[in-house]
Length: 370
Image 1 (spheres, one colour):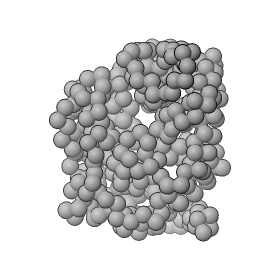
Image 2 (cartoon, helix red, strand yellow):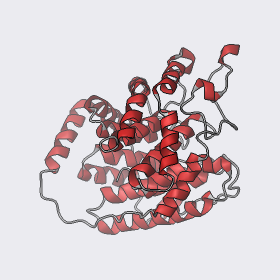
Image 3 (cartoon, helix red, strand yellow):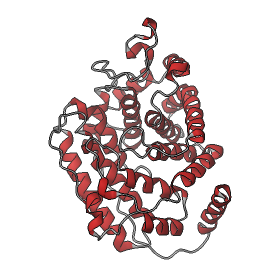
């Protein structure tokens, strides 16, 4: 039944694109100035070569595995942990694609060329190929690696350096895309946490990668898994959000994924049963940014990222509901409130925040996924 539903959904998506649609209110794009892009970019550039402090996160099964991250994973070792190094590289590529004439562009290309070269990526592949690292960075870091590859794929259409970087990264991309495919195929139920283990968040990155690279088999798998995991969900418990160290909204991220795999009309009906009405008191838990009482605590400070992630998801929902302009406008206004709050908090977050928050800010401010 799931496969049948998926096939029908794909047909409806294709058919819907050929039908005349009523005029809808556009969702305004956020504007990112070159100065703001440069400021956020610097946070990533300053940490991708910074080996310490570092939180490795992998399994040690002998003295020979106790080596510096710069040796074990020489492409992605800075920015405190592997996944932050990966999305720090994504942030650099994203800004380079949008602002190729920034003063930092030459330095940026040097850093990317140093990290994204075949010998370093070969060492990354060897690290991930070890049986002890089978679950390393699954699924969060893998999702961001696929996001990086998708960004390089887009930039490579017009940039020779990006072509080289994309080719160098390909062996690791293919390995981790296959690993994520196998994992999702074996997973009985999704992980609905508000941190790195969240299934829907990684699937969003993976699906955007599959579509950007025209990997139809991977896209079909992701769509089938999304429908299997989430299509029957009703009444998401928004009253329980957030947990104290969340940087992902379990309810909003699920909705953000489902808007990508359902027709606009089917999604609107599904969302009506999944989330409370935007004007209702029940939506208040998602409406206001969460108070962050210690911006420099690297775990409590996750809540800064939560505001960025909520804002991005809310803007995605506003786009999906653009045929309902009043609701779309309200969602966009709530997203703006989260955005302004989080932007004001980054500079006070210390290295525990700056090593990763720039990526979340740029994801939102450059309208990824819209």
